[in-house]
Length: 373
Image (cartoon, rainbow, N blue to C red):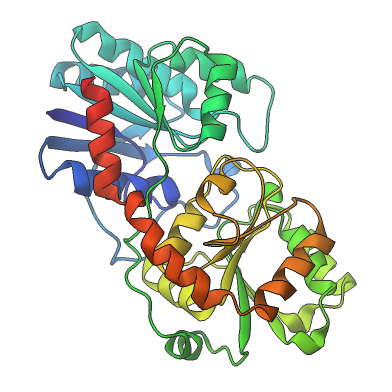
C-alpha cells in the first residue's frame, strides 16, 4: 500500500512526533510510506515551551519532508496539491488540537479531488483539555473530509460521537513507547540523576493545569516526612511556573521535591522512569496518556486518576492503582498504601504479561485491517 503520514516528526519534538516515528517504523515493513511534517508548527507567541525542536540528536530520524506551515493558507493548498498528485492509497493524519483543523481541512479537501486517496484520522484528543471558543466548529470542518477514524481510547470515541454521530471508527489503544530504550537498574538511574533517596515517585511530562500537579503537591504535603518520599518532577512548565513554586513554598514541601523543568531528551527518559518506584498521573481530566505507555515500557506501575481513558490502560490493583481525581487526601492515602503493601514488584510482573497487546506491530496490523474493511 502507498501511504502518506501527515504529522509532526523529527526534528519537531513531543509525543505526537514520537508516535509518528514509531508508526512509520512499523508500517514501512510492508508498505511504501512517506511522511510529511511541519516546517512551522505553532507561532512563537502561542508556544509556551522553550523550543519546538528535539534537542536529542539520537532521536529516530524518519527523513520526513518538512513542508506544512500551520499559519499559511497558501502553503496548505500547495501541500494539498502535492499529496493529491502523489496519489497515495491512504493519507494518515494525526489530530490532537483544533488549532490545526483549518489547515488539515484545506489539505484534505484538495486531496479528495483525486477520487482515490482514503483519509484516516488518528485522534489523540477531539475535545481539548483546555477548551476555547470555536473548537468544535473548527474540528467539524476538518472531520467532514475524513473517511475513517482511529481513536486511542473509548473516551475519545465518545468525544467523536458527540460531534459526528455518523462516522466509521474504531478504538485501538495507544501502543507502548519503546523508543526510549530498555530499563536500567534503579541504583544506576539514581546515580545518573544524583538522587540519594530510597523512595521516589515520578511526575513526568509537560506541566499543564489539567494534569493535576497541584493536586499531587497537596497530597505530598499530607504525607508524613518520616515516610521519606521524594517527588521527582521532570518536564517543562506549560502553565504558570510561579504559581506552582509558590504552592510548593506554601505547603512547606520544597525539601521533598526534586525539580527538573528542562525538556527531557529521549536518551535521558529511561533514567527517570528507572529511578522511580511508581509514576503518578494525578490528571483532572484525560483522553488517554502517552506517559502511562512510557511507564509500561519500563515495567513501571502507575498511580492515576480514574478519569477518561486512563482506567482503560491502568488496571486497578494489577498494573497500578486508580484514585478519585482532584482529591489530595485520597491520593496521599493511595501513595502511602502503595509503599505499605510493597506493590512495585507485584505490579511490574503483571505489566510484563500485559504489555504485549500494546505493541506497535499489533497497532499497525489493526490499522491496516480497519482501512481494508
